[in-house]
Image 1 (cartoon, one colour):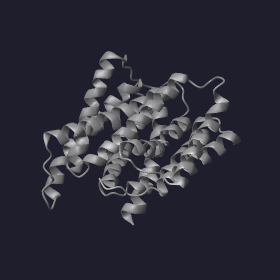
Image 2 (cartoon, one colour):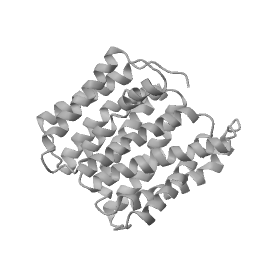
Image 3 (tube, helix red, strand yellow):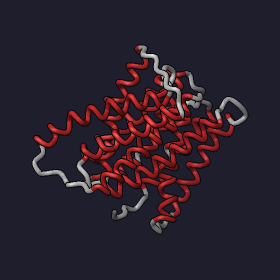
Amino acid sequence: MLFRVILPLIFIGLWSSAFLAAKVGVQYSTPFAMLLVRFTLVSLVFAVMLPFARIWRDTPPPRATRAVIGWTALVGITLHSTYLGSVFFALSLGLPAGIAALIVSLQPLLASGLAIFLFGERLRAIQIGGMLAGLAGVVLVLLPKMGGGMPALGLASVCFGLCAVTFGTLLQKRIGGKIDLLQGNLVQTLAASAFLAVICLTVETPRIAWEIPFILSLAWQVVMVSAGAYVILMVLIQRDTMASVSSLMFLVPPTTAVIAAVGFNEPLTFLGIIGFCLTSAGVYLVTANSRPRDA
């Protein structure tokens, strides 16, 4: 019950809120600077938690090799800094939060497509139909907006983030269980912080306005999203219940779109609602009918 229903639902709620918190934050900060502060703080939280976790542990944690630590760092760079950096950058360019959530929700569809070539998996007819429905839904949402007002660079950036989160999730599945959960999260956030620091020094001119909305947005991202949602995500992946999360991911785009429409006045047309529902149904059909694969 806990790992199949409760934790996945909590994860979905926190995951949906991340897009909206980011939408607020990028109004007061450059995207990569905000992420650098966020993951630096999260790294400090994990570093403080690590000694206490070792005291409370009944059994010693798995001893990670240098190779595993290196791959874990790469997960941090892809799953944290690259994916979120791409999404935050897109939001800073004016891409609606609902659109960003819709595109990255295609991750299970992309992962299923890659599995055909990487692992020789065969998709069921209903999964192929789900992929087509998901893509058709995205077209319905985006097509009326392509005439103007939709930042092309923002769309390209969030699509790049989609590729990053797909790669990071597949890689995490491969190394899950070979490193202590909290230690792995610390390695990931430290690697993400280092990568973001390089980006801030070379690509971005960092700017942060330390006003109340930004502080609240940052606090929510640190405590509820990074220290909450990502830990839950790693737990679910390691316990092989990622299917529970994936089959619920179809709730993220419509939830985000509705909240964004109410809280941020993002337009939500009838055709857009149909598109969101179609994509959500497609994601559900792909993930709910996937066969478990041995790692």
